[in-house]
Length: 496
Image (spheres, rainbow, N blue to C red):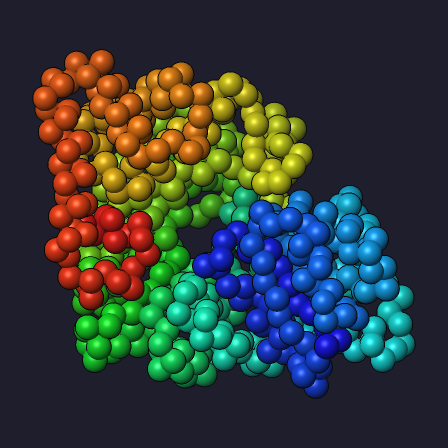
């Protein structure tokens, strides 16, 4: 073996689509190239030992915001114990501002941006000469028709136990300044027939859980409909063995043809990720986000009331120009629309994103270490930002988990943000923790807080017991064929 492709995934269930693209496009070098994935949290020495066991000449690392610190330690160790092994870096974290990164200093070469063509070309030069003179190589962007699709490289183990990431297009036409996709000129579609053929093969091999990484799945409705028809056909042919599809959609673009298709999906088979980020038009304008808020709200309301799709809707705290009161109004509005989950995010300054242009004007202060979360700005001071961070964590544990579905309305009442913030502050005061809180303890704490707010203790006990009883009953009596394709959290929501 001459070339080893590797990365540290955030969890085992994630399978690296990027590495599989590289392997699929290695050409004549594919025979001497292999792929080895790990999960963050492992001992650095153990990873180094496993990488070196087959004596590779080149190791290519996919570097991301979640693994850059651990990958930096790994590269440093490899350069000490195996200095002759050539280290090549790629991925979004090293594609921008690479001149100031320790991991780039340690490595031999860096490929920025698209690596499908540039990485194999660089490997040929390293192995066969002439030796590359430049350390940083800008990724060449070929026509998508020239890129070999990677889906045959998903193993049977991947299909059985992991989420399969797929993409019908690359890029994004929007310019939201907090997102790396804002650097794209547009969105480029893959050949749809070839892509659907790959999905057909994956399904025939047993794949049932597909997560699309397209940034704007519903931008081209004709394409969206053909892809959804693919999944609907599988659902109709195999209702006892359903597929599950996850898409990221533009919130204010849901024409009637797409709505009609969505209505045909049964529960537990369709999930939408919807980025609202902010309902404040002034904030949206500051970060170059084009969004019709009224249409977006109408579409979310329709999806929750008329369809069986599972909705994750995103809001970001800490955007320039938005104070807590503005964020709270947007949060309350979103709660009123009824999505299954609200993903409460804290702004991160991803390397290369245009959001940096607001740093001075809005006093944006970011953590210098990954994931580069905002610590304060001119509207939200550091202590308040910390309260928002804790709110986000407790919201995930209580609301997004689906474990407190009957209890949540008692918490939120007519002022969701203010009331949940009160609970969040109280929980932190009584636990001094936002992680590793056992479910039974969390339920007890929530119950105690509700009683302190004036709720009758028998009603609180009965409601919490109903949440637990509902899950127990669902686990015993639910038909597994209806939810087995859905992720665990979605299955919990379906149990309500």
